[in-house]
Image 1 (spheres, rainbow, N blue to C red):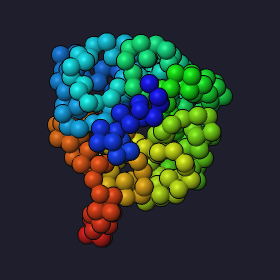
Image 2 (cartoon, rainbow, N blue to C red):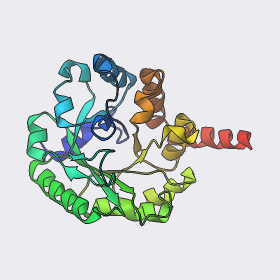
Image 3 (cartoon, one colour):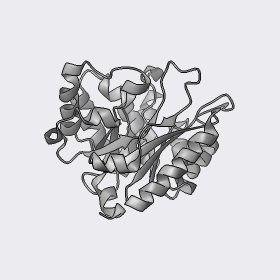
Image 4 (cartoon, rainbow, N blue to C red):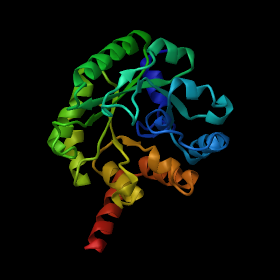
Length: 266
């Protein structure tokens, strides 16, 4: 299958906009939900309208394929835990051929720019990109400015550098940290020739996720990749449905809505 066909599958309405729900946190931080609620969570995310879920290879085997429907499957190849001496370190724990055998529509790799293991993570991204080209499998680079040499991870100029690293090493899409203020994501997007997806950000910021989604889409982002704020929501289905409406809606309307919200808040 040609890579372009697989890339199209990553957007359910085929509009080149993307709402991804990463559910790979069980490696880094522990269980996402109790085991007996896992299938319900997957069902809620799919019915809500997510374009793709992101999981590790072993967790994939616990998903009933009938639950996925039109929702694409991204296998995450990087891992590291919150218990490591260096929590910014990531290693590869899978490969492209294995992901294809499991039915992946794409793979993702995590890179922390500014970390003490940046060199290895960049090499891993390049290796995976080469394999993805050989097998025509889309590659999503999840690249963040994180580490002891990063003063401001929300600096738009830094984020522009970060996303272009993903471009140069062969990614097809890139996910990164939100610029602050969020409107400055427009500068990041303008610098980058591949689709940019914004992370949802930590749940303790107090920011309304849906308003943030409107702002990043109005800034020109191709979509969102939101995990923790979905699976910890009172109703993951309702939140995903609202986010899907924003991502696949009218960006001009999002700009008007976000601007009016900010004006009313002043």
